[in-house]
Each structure stands twice: as C-alpha cells, then as structure tokens.
Length: 380
Image: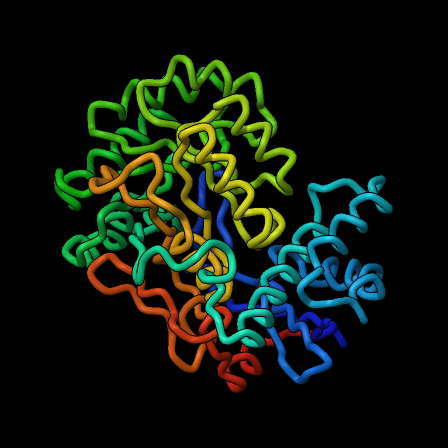
C-alpha cells in the first residue's frame, strides 16, 4: 500500500499591470494566486492539488499537519483530515487550514489515480460522461471608468463560441445592475443562459431591488446575492426571490454546505474544491444535493488544477433526478479573465471547445505540469 512520503507547497502568482485590474463589486485585483500542493508517495508517484488563498499562511498550516500525513496510506488521507479537525477544532474551519486540506485531498486523489491507472472521475463515482458543459465566467468590473464598454469588450469575442451560459458581475447598485444585464442580454442573445454574481455585496433590501430590475431579462441564477453567513437572509430571499439563487463558494467544509442544503437556502450549490475540503467533500455535497433534489455547479477561480478537479467531479455525477432528458446540464465555471495559472501551467492546456470541456483521459487528474511554467510563476 502506497504511503505518503512528503507534502510540499509551491506559491504561484500571475499579475497584470495595476491599470488592468479586474474583479467584483467588492473590489478589483491585479494578482491571481494559489498554492500548488505536491504529494509524494514512497512508490515514487506524485500527485498535485490546489489550495486556495494566501500561500504563506497555508505553508504554516502545512508545518503543523504534515506529520499527521507522512507515513500513512495515500488512500486513507480522509481519516487523517478528520483527525486534524478533531484535535485542532479551536482553529476553526473558515481558514487556510481547510484550503490546505483541500489541496492535499486533490493531490491524494491524483496520486491514487496514477497508482491504479484510473481517472479521478472513475475513482469518485465512475465516469458518467466524456465532456462537461462550461459557462463563460467573466463580465468583470475593471479599473477603467467606462464599465459598459469594457463589459461589451469582454462578452463580444465569446458570444458566438457555443457557450450554453454566461456570467457577469453586478452588485454595485441596482440601477447599474439593470444596465449591465440589459447590455449582456443584447450581446449574448436570448438562447444562451445569463447568470449574475454580486459577490455578497448587498443587504436583503438591495438584493430585492436588484432582482426586481433584472428579472425581466431572464436570469438563470443570481449568485451570492448576500454575504455567506447571512443564513436568515438566504432563507427569506429563497422564499421571495423571483429568480433562482446560487451560492456556496465561500463555505468551508461539509458542515456549512450541509446547512445550506438542509435548509434549501439556494437552488444551485457551488462548492469550491480548492477550499471546501477537496474531492471528498465535493462528492459528499453532491450526494446531499441529490438527496434534496438540488442542482450543483462547482465554483472555479484559481489554477488549472482546480479546474481539472472540478471537471472530473462533474463528470462523475449522475443525472438524477433526470434520465433521458436533462433540462440544464451541470456546468463547470470557466473563467474568462486573464489568468495564466489556469491556461499555461500544463503541457497540454485544458481547452474549451464549443462550450464544452473534455474530461482529461489520463490517470489521476490527467494533466501534466509544465516545469518551466511552474518555475515562471513561482514566487517566494
């Protein structure tokens, strides 16, 4: 039985000039970063994973927890993670400890797949499909003052590429929300689905006004309308909103995601595999969503490693409760912002063709890091 010999983390960062920063209603960023987790086994097989958030903090947590993992079976890392939660419960769960454990989990699954000659999708539920639907995630706010022009410039090149859905950022004020949604609908047409994301920048009254203004444009889902911990707000919003609600990207561990699911506080649940606990937690969330007849769509906004993990996860999901006819296929978020960490890290990049992402066919995650690219984006 292969055992874990070592775990290390590499800090990755991609930056654009400050005047080209982009982002959400809460603010802009000129830097994209994540932790590359490398897990080595005593049989010489290495797996890779992604840990969301500030890598220096993640690395400090790694110094704490690595002794728990080293020497244990790579197939038993879930139990190690649970032991860490039990012994160090005072540290909480909304932090880089969970991001680190997420990256370790993804890396362990990559290593397991390589050891067994199986893809991650086969490991976590069986490969149900060879490609998954992607939605074009962009429509960012930018550092320029002409927001309508920059929104159009982001959407127009992709309007004819076959994406089944698009997502744009809103949330600065309801009046602007309507203008952005109207423009997006004109550009993408009426056949493509349109989703919006305010990144929790509203209180309840602001969201209701925003929904009133944008609902006539056919909103497929309204993402993160409220702050992640506004449980009562989500409960009330779910009962009154005239558009579907999506959220979950900022929830760590199965505990908070289960609370979201059990309360039916959203129509679409959006775990981020690089911070929620990895593939193991995502698989549990998928089962819980199935039990509550809720939709799921993983959030992806880091590196190509997290994207690969999300693709395998969605490829493993059954169509339940659908059978021959699936009204809306489960979609993976495909970031359209400038981010070399998504597109340039692999020898063979993950490409989106006609709105679909092919599931990598090799063992594990099915992707191979380009050493020169990793070196180029590694920071101290």
